[in-house]
Image (cartoon, rainbow, N blue to C red; front, side, top):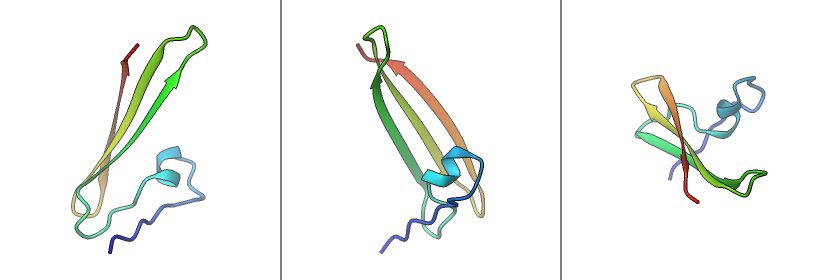
Length: 65
């Protein structure tokens, strides 16, 4: 079973939401789709890729309508 471990008191927003390095965990994604004030729809994805005892975060935003 996978255990999701976060750091709830961290100032870095994604450490409060996404997992910390866990044995066997390779990658985690958080995708949010939203409509802005002009009515345009965007999809924002944060990807966390895990290494031995650390991680690298990257993010993308794309216009979808």
